[in-house]
Length: 241
Image (cartoon, rainbow, N blue to C red; front, side):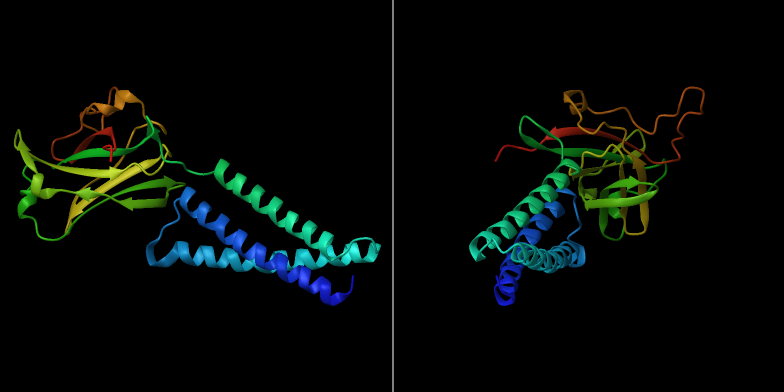
């Protein structure tokens, strides 16, 4: 097989690699919760697609020249082997991504919602009267750094007062199975709290009831003071459509 046909094999395998790498990158982005903020996921897909196209063009050209040196393979057979190489590598990459992915927990085939109540310190002002936008976030912390996060819904309009302390409800999509989950909330410049959520990767039915108010100090440590914020949580299934 001559050089023009070898280049054509490389070109066609590069096109196949371009689309395969882009498809695998899009799956990887969903499985690994790559942020869509500022187009991060889109840039990642485009970059991986371009790198895949270049890499598989080179691979296809190399395969074609190796087989041409043997003098046995024709164009169709060479192209088939090059495309098979694309399929094998893309399949391996997809399998590795899936195995290492952070798949959200489910129950009975339904996604889960993390419901949280933030309890403000004694003497705090009413959340309904606080100035600024309400904000809350569920994230994953690894090595002291926030690896991923998603916004939740903080509802100061539904705040209630119990025993002289204001309680503000919030909800989050339980998008991650990582046990290293962290939540925080604020209204304008007022911080409502930042806490690690003590919950396993895939919470069972026992987490459908409200937890005790947390943080809970270890045995022998002082009781968590009412002058600091606290929280409680539970996990519920997404409503059926």
